[in-house]
Length: 627
Image (cartoon, rainbow, N blue to C red; front, side, top):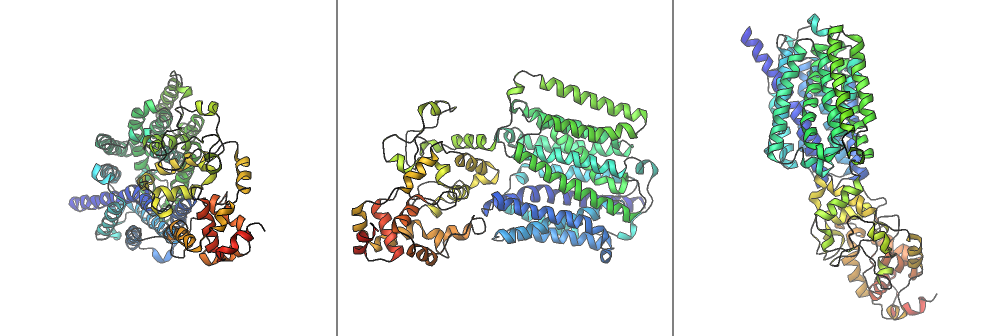
């Protein structure tokens, strides 16, 4: 019987490890990297991730309530099969709608798997050492995910790894008939459902916010997850802390475990506000995550105050729907919108986690928790008193993007200075004053122009066009010598660079728009316009977006603010507009849309492309130009 129980326990360890590896290395990293490869970002990315959250929340709540799937073995295998299929489907050439569907399957598969697993863990992790097996499974998963060859693998390799592990777990002998309904008294009295739900929600919120901020701030990421040394240390800390958390829970110290998790996570959230203390934050963060993660997995089967399997399942569903998916979404939103975790919010989370613990446990444990809280508050106060801390803040997306612009050497080919009293003013203007340039730290005026000037690029190009150009320069700009920067979108640097470029617009915007509206090709350009030349210009500069099979059109389909009109639609519009108006659109684009200008084209080229679009004989162009 002992060997049988130990084998059963190791099945639980394997299942926990598989589910966590899938979630951490694929759902949080590999799938996002795959979406970046497909060019899905911005609002489209948010829509896809909302679909994943919808699948996770919906299936977390429905799984314990579907009476047709009462067999936990079959239900677990269904969740694993859906998860594996979603990982493999992510490798297909997805568009926005299909990517959202795959994301929904990822969230739904994870929900079915996790809720079923944690509800019936005593059948698969064992009763006598079940919590210890939970700690081992969680620690092993975090360690595997931090192995450098796994962490740095490409999206395809991570998806295949995740699918393979799920497929292997399906083949495990799960033996649902071994489920034990008895719950040991000292364990089931550790945490009420309300305390568990609010505490896990606060901790996951802190974790997700810190995780997002670190991942999208290069200097912070470099001090935590870049380099083999950091990864091995993180993996070791996760593994050791997970086992320690299991030992605390085995001894009935769930409140102390959550208090310690808050202390570590809260301190890490404050430390990441100052890049000079990121090394310390990188030590506290994995400790806090592993402490609460073990409790989160162990709670329904080993820590909940209920003897009913059905009630354990419902509590698991609510915890993973509200605290897991909801808390994660709120944390990511905080990271995106604020760029840091406010100290006041850390304090509020501390109240949520610590207050119920202090009120609801005996004096001995309340004293331990109070000591943890006092130490945390003291550490935060001392940290806030560090000279220079008040002036240190996590950089905004625009500020991070400026750093990317500098680090990638963009200044070597692009200036940011409109030269006064030159053709620059019409093409790139308006002019920026010397005083405004001097206020930049450092100034980025540049002295070379292998590409266009970018001083006012935010006025002339939409964020989507900027991203499309960075991902595939020659897909949107014929014969562009610029190399691709698609790799920047794998870790958020590309989005930061787009945010910076989109912010480059000066105070003279209205004056510049008026100058564009008054422009028209010179008379000789109209008289010399050639429709054949215009067709060549169209093929080189316009077909990529306006042809039905245009490369840029298909690549970014579903992400345009408005899908570009086809050639037939363009000609229909051009036929009803003055050719001077058509020329202005071809030259300067349409502000506020994804339609870019072609400022560098000559008057002859602009007049010729208008001639081809209107299909008017060249000799009639000069006469109609004055109408």
